[in-house]
Amino acid sequence: MAFVAAPRRGAFASLGARVARLAELVTTPVVPSDYLDMLSPLRASADLRGRIEEIHPETRDAATLVIRPGKGWRGHAPGQYVRIGVDVDGVRQWRAYSLTSRTGRADGRISVTVKAMPDGTVSNYLVRRARTGTLIQLDQATGDFTLPSPRPRKALFLTAGSGITPVMGMLRNAVDELADVVVVHSAPRSHDVIFADELRHLATSGRIRLVERHTDVDGMLDFGQLGGIVADWTERETWACGPTGLLDAADQRWSDAGVADRLHTERFRPTVIVTGEGGQVTFSQTGTTVDADGSTALLDTGERAGVLMPSGCRMGICFGCVSPLRSGAVRDLRNGEVTTAVPGDGVLIQTCVSAAAGACDIER
Image (cartoon, rainbow, N blue to C red; front, side, top):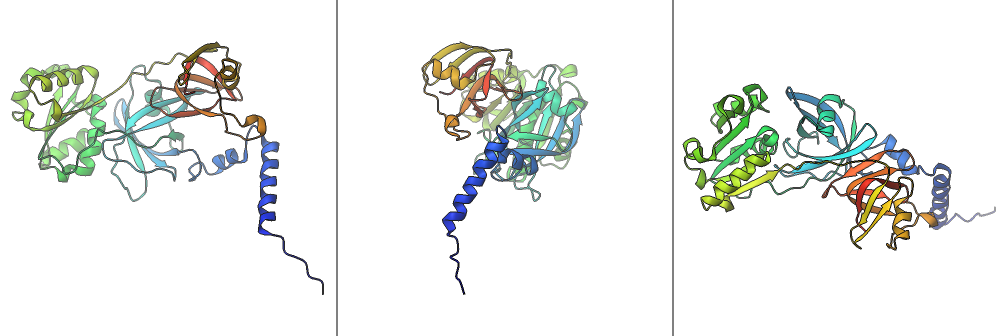
């Protein structure tokens, strides 16, 4: 009887590696992981994504999106926000939205509540055009607009418009841990109050004291008269979120009263990014700025300017050229899609297949 030696374990590994390399050669510029992303976009090893599974209107211009995050999602603390990336008319846009869901839901889903702004590209898309089943990009939750532990004895939440969203995240998770809560919320009219029914139910059940100010009727909140609304406001730990004017006035009032350390604010940031063909490219780590056309890869642009650009592309190592896009816009040379970012978004791009689509800042 003849005996045949069993192949070594390393031989199988080597064979698998050769098959994988062959597959990548055949499918380049789409690699096998791209096909896995299409088949299982929420898998653990994929870029973090989410799927919109439910959309619930809140007001005429606001909606709550219930999202199933990918397996890499690490959870959030009430009051934090998440950056969401969506493709709107061929442009990848990133925006930050407060998480409004309870933490640790049994079904693993999360929610954000979005108000459509008059010129808001992403907010209007999410409120008016997004559909269930839509895949979106996700970042991990972040932000320090959260409740401390132990909880404060007295709390004041001062909000306007969609500034109620992080506060609702806190209330849904911790209202029973707060003994004395006042919520002062401003909106144009009664029907513009996001989460109106839920807030009013919390008030009628005695769990919060709710003060609604309908600015089209009552006018803007006068901080000089705050004592007549919340007599002990200087004794309360306060969280304020809303438009810049509201927060600037709050900063001044709390500072004048000598209790600035009791005020915690969350500010919205406007995002205006101009896209086009080519633009000024800044490599921020080296302080290098050059003009680039819209057809030259950023990898080549950087190397020609003397910037040390990481790259394994020429050796067949894909994704060796990935770099952070700090801000601005770039275009994928393979399909024409535009990706945008503002500081803090943490967007990663492949410089070997990306060109300037307007002014941009690459962290190199």
